Length: 493
Image 1 (cartoon, rainbow, N blue to C red):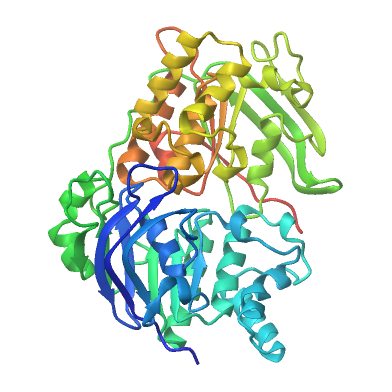
Image 2: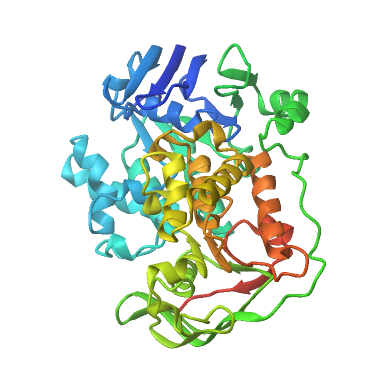
């Protein structure tokens, strides 16, 4: 049985090769074997970078520059691969093999676990996280939330001495959140595994952890990366108000929310009738959908993982053909393009239907953040002056201005999400469809993003507002936007 691993950070820091600013600087702390730590900090404070460092997957000198020491189980983290099991923010980035069982077994096979032990471990881990699908189910058919559970199952099956979780419940439905938390709790009951978990919404993890470490991040003005460290009661009680002001989610300090819309919703822009949606031809994931998308209204599409929410979003955005039924664009959305969004050219889509994917990396195209925001305006043929005004405004409003020249792939998960939202807004579409829009956001950026979406919904002067479609498990964002709820149950699989 693997022993729990101790962690020592001794003045450790990391800077990505393409960045001038340090992602983490002067991180110093010790985590005792078997401790359960909740790692907090504002968006961009370096939490994910630190987890990658502990897992030994940051790469060598060509990937970036490291200072100080990061020790796991008495050896450098880079030499301790296999002691740590890491679940990333983006579960899609961890899906390696084509079938569920093979993917869950991948880590065990790389560690040389005897074959006779692998499959019992795999089945136990899949049961623990509530992923009730056949072992031969193609991984490409899983929803984002199901992939999240698969990534956790693969980590649990390794029986790691150090379990690193980077927002493991971000894309899960409320039931799935509890199942994953309980799966981790059962692991900790059976094995004295050291746990470090990063989450923005922390209530669900507080019963499991005995310590909270808060990172201040580059540019925070702190002398050390660690700005608070202690028991949950000490840190959240003594420092709660200060941390909340910095953007840390703290129970009892909710972020501000915008007022209700002053006007009734406008005209219908998209209309679905008896709609069925699919990703694999001939295999509908949801059917019988009757839905109107209206100007000046926020619509929240909710439901359990695997219900077809993301597939519906891609269909509404004109990126997937309907399995059956009708999806019709009405005037003025259809003028000059026709009534069938799937038949529209990409340039016609840009100003009509904006889509923010669940996985930010799936739509990153530019070499820098600024390049990314210029992709849409360039495709529309905007002049340099107008393009610069739009891009500069979005950089400032979404707190990306200091990252304008950074490689998008070196951003934190929350920063990537804000970038993809900004890129969609750069072409000013009439309908904006966002899949998990608040994923990875701290309390401050969550509030700012929600306020921006509310302003788009409400429009300006007498102009109709933007239609906002939010596919989300974050019911707080649905409430904050005063969104009409459309609950999906999917179809039997």
